[in-house]
Amino acid sequence: MAYRAVAFPNAEGEDISPIKLKYTRAWAVKIGESRIIRGGFVAVFSIARCPYLTCSLFPFTRLVWSCLAGFIYARLARSVAFPSNRSQALARRRWWLPRHRLSGLAAARTTITREVLRPLGSQTGAMSYKPTLIFLLLVSLACSAQLAPTDLAQRIERRIRTDDNVPVTVKVIVSSPRVSEFPNYDTVTVTFDSDGKKQNYEFLLSTDRKTLVRVAKIDLSKDPYLENLRKIDVKGRPVRGNPNAKVVAVNYDDFQCPYCSRVHQTLFPELLKEYGDRVAFIYKDFPLSEIHPWAVHAAVNANCLASQSNDAYWDFADYTHANRQSVDSEKGLDNQLAALDRIAMTEVAKFGLDSAKLQSCVKAQNDKAVKASVKEGESLGITGTPTMFVNGQMIDGAQPASEFRALFDSALKEAGVPAPTTPPTPAAAASTTSPR
View 1 (cartoon, rainbow, N blue to C red):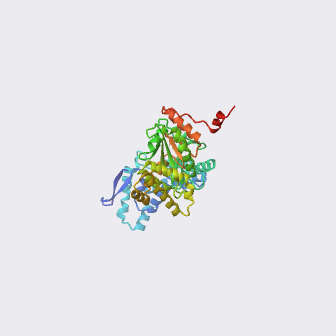
View 2 (cartoon, rainbow, N blue to C red; view 1 turned 60 degrees about the vertical axis):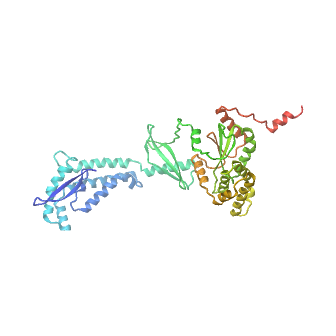
View 3 (cartoon, rainbow, N blue to C red; view 1 turned 45 degrees about the horizontal axis):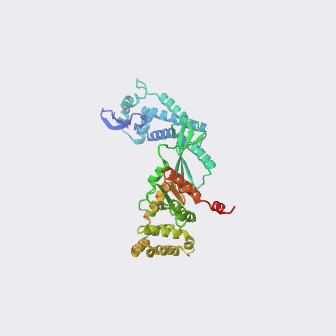
């Protein structure tokens, strides 16, 4: 903001200390009547913020308030720039100002007119408050005609809560409307905040503020499957099946999840026998620690085994998923964790592992890798287990073997690999072998 220093001469022609004046603020001149100055600030602030300060009032009341504030400001601008003799006497009596300072106001008035008011007023230097009053009344009318943003936000929030059945515990935050790429519509961002986890959704709001349209902008320039694959890091993870396969199935697993156990038994050994030479099966950690207290501990133990042997990892995974209920039957969390440690240590003799190294890893319980895997899963949109990505395509839940076969076959076809011959169902096999 540019300023100009204006010197106030006294009766002897000497300059009093300069005062910085904003070009567009006649009320910034300090002449002693601080109450008027403060009143001007309040009036201007009321005009600029009228839709917010008076949003709870009726439109007509807002109009009257804004017009009154504009009139007060206009009169203040005139009285401050051209102080009357009464104002001079009041200032002298109240602050005991020397007469030579008050006598300099006449010269100061001329300086103010030349330096500040002339660009805003007429070419002759006479400044009338009428143009200012008219301008501010127009501004007040525009402010009063606006719909208070809080009123609009409340209407949008109530409609969304009703239509989408949003829980009371979820905060709904509505942004201010902004210009959109669609004619006659503005854009509004609605944020859903649940315990710090925020999700943003874009809506179109008609310019008459009567229609709200949901918007789902889809970027066709990107392949969502490839985008998912770029987010998944499988470096160093144990692999079952063909490590060089063109089709990769990455399953986000929870050792304490009953649905994960069901999917694990569907994949191994049934589907592994059919697709083991065409598909690479990889597990990543996504323990739901809020409801599964020993899932993180089991994931850490499994990773300790994987650091020494892939086969030991898969053997631990097979046993834990098959005997999940036996771990749950242990009394107390400490006993459950001790049972998981015993299961992990039994792998030493089976696969010739380094017992001391494994025991040290199990005891340390470094869950850094597990947390990184969970964070990665959240970036992929995972909210529960099991969730599998087959060449980037997501499938979640405890699906039957037929669903996994259809997904594997589709991925193999896209990769140019023939699908295996589907084994006949038990009913079909019985009909072909029955005597006629």
